[in-house]
Image (tube, rainbow, N blue to C red):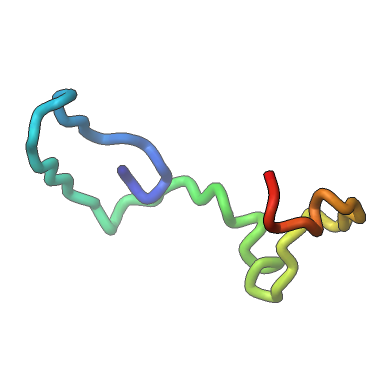
Amino acid sequence: MRPDGVTTGRLAKNRAGILISTVDLNQEYYDSTKAWRDNAMNHKFHSGTLVNDPRSANRKEL
């Protein structure tokens, strides 16, 4: 996987193996989290509208 989430290689199914990939640190990759990073760093983990629902508060049941 590259830093932007693109798969760069794949091993054969049902076979043991090691996949070694090189990441070019000089290449610019797409940053899908850029728009949300500032909010997350400031402990805001929602889109701006908080949900008030008992199912969201219940963390012990699916």
